[in-house]
Image (cartoon, helix red, strand yellow):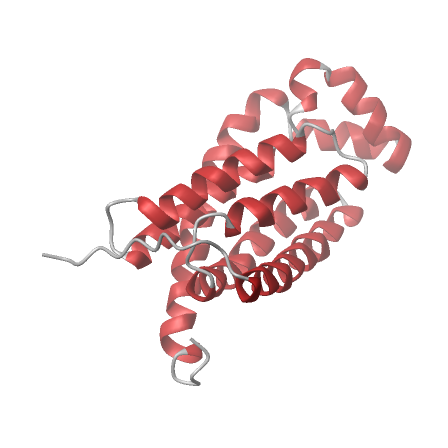
Length: 200
């Protein structure tokens, strides 16, 4: 029988320091790859794919360092807040926080070995990709106007052609798959590099 470890201790000051560090790294990667969107909507999609895979490494190491409930919730809440301050809809904070809670619960309490819990937790976080796009579902014209005001009408037309309201469910599922792959890549990196170097 596989031994299932379920850490339940509260976050310590040291843990919170790690939360701050990994949250910063996570957001920098998310923002950096998101900037690819300035070259066109298709580049934004590519940036999301690459960013999700790269952050898989970050989150797998993060969960190894801070294997306690609350870490991912804090990180996702902060990320949602930062995106809101950058101009995204305010409810994104709630969406990111909710997915953070779900991912935390899986990473901490799911009846699975630790590696599988962590990979599945990051798979859930892959769905955060659709949260900034959600307003187009109930106000497509307003969303188009918002994008056009920032990037121009031609860009907005191409953007909504690629990221249409009807396609969001497929992007959500794609985010889960990418999160799963990113988690596996992160675990492989941990096994092949970080542990050999004594990092974990």
